[in-house]
Amino acid sequence: MEKIIRSMSYANCGHGIMEEYMKVLAIVQARCSSSRLPGKVIKRLAGKPMIVHEIERLERSKLIDEIVLATSTDSSDDALASIVLGTGTEVFRGNLEDVLDRYYQCAERHSPEHVVRITGDCPVIDWRLIDTVIKTHIEHGNDYTNLSGDYPDGLDTEVMKFSVLKEAWEKAKMLSEREHVTLYIHNHKDDFRMERIPCDKKLGDLRWTVDEPQDFSFVEKVFSELYGDNPDFAMDDILELLDRKPELAHINSGIMRNEGLAKSLANDREIDG
Image (cartoon, rainbow, N blue to C red; front, top):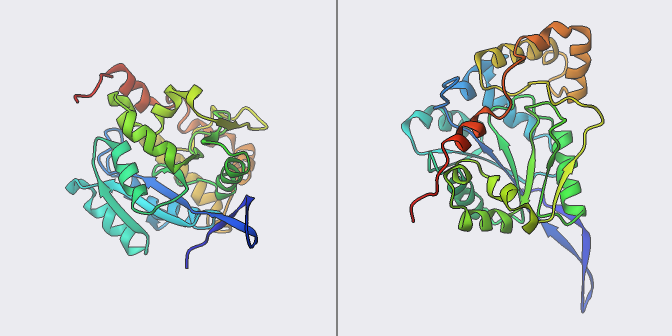
């Protein structure tokens, strides 16, 4: 049975007060054809494919109703699709290059009011932060809500109204806006009600995502230290670990944040048609 979260607003009707329900869909974007670390999302981490750990962490959310993996129809993603289907999680397969189209087509089939965007290279994603973003997004009536860049790279969470995702899908014309799902929204921020949730500390230099071999080595160490005793370890548990063993943060330090976006912008052009 689906979980449906209750919004903070209520609608008056002739028969009294009717609670308004909103469906929240989380879409995990992943593929195996990464140029920097091919097959990273299915690399084994603490006995399971990395993507399985990420999905299990998302499943602890109290506010997400459905989780779907959005991958491509390319044969390189056959193994990924098979692994995720084996966990009982739904898989949508769409355009490899036009990720915005893949995201929209996936979301459209589930008729959500709100869409949570998660990328498949974040195996330490924290459902507590995700729920904070969702709750803030709905309570404040935002079109788009995310975490500030002061959070460690790898906890990235974006929540948007489905109507806003649809508008981006309809209007995005730049190649970069088709490859990066929410770039159109950021490029037209004056058109939307947007909010970034601040972090108490400046932690943006910490790198907990997986794009490079060094990144995978880092998360292997984190899982080795924390997962056995507490599979539901949180952001604060990793920070505590780094306080005890600061050398771990040096494993993958110095790698550029959002390198893929920088490459897209450097080669940007308007799409045909």
